[in-house]
Image (cartoon, rainbow over all chains, first blue to last red; front, side):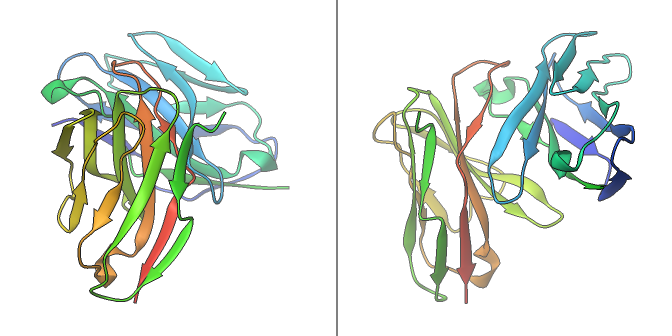
Amino acid sequence: GDSVTQMEGPVTLSEEAFLTINCTYTATGYPSLFWYVQYPGEGLQLLLKATKADDKGSNKGFEATYRKETTSFHLEKGSVQVSDSAVYFCALSTGTGGSYIPTFGRGTSLIVHP
Amino acid sequence: NAGVTQTPKFQVLKTGQSMTLQCAQDMNHEYMSWYRQDPGMGLRLIHYSVGAGITDQGEVPNGYNVSRSTTEDFPLRLLSAAPSQTSVYFCASSYSGQSTEAFFGQGTRLTVV
């Protein structure tokens, strides 16, 4: 079945450091890929997405490129801020079994220190 | 914009009690789903619905019931609460389609003692 694997956290960085959170996937068919962010005490919200190979999703300084050859969708940001502290979830959707309910990774906690 | 509204935000139950977590969306989304979030386990799908009158089981359905009588509402029922059901529960909704975004509620933190 479909699955998403994310690097374990927490990831702890100083402000203005470079961020990478790794995400790889296994899927039947040709999935759409997503990154969601969860701030403390809140629900998840979409950060960015990509729907086909070599697409780059971007938002709020975050980027991720859909790499079909390596089945990966790594999240990057050039300079993190304290306000980026949150839990980040990688997800995919394929329509397997007739529904488009997304499959989520376990989440990676990011802590950014001033 | 209300989006996805979950009630209550917090709940404490005694073992064996039953309750219903409410979820409502005002975006006319076909898809609705319930997840539980536990430390180290990420989000696990409990039940989902692809339209009014249609529901199906997810990864961890035992101990939970759902129904979808309207497009807007998708309540989750705990039949006989157990301490293992202590968790944060999220409801989500989306349009049908592979590239569509899921919208989440703020969550319900449930403690079963």
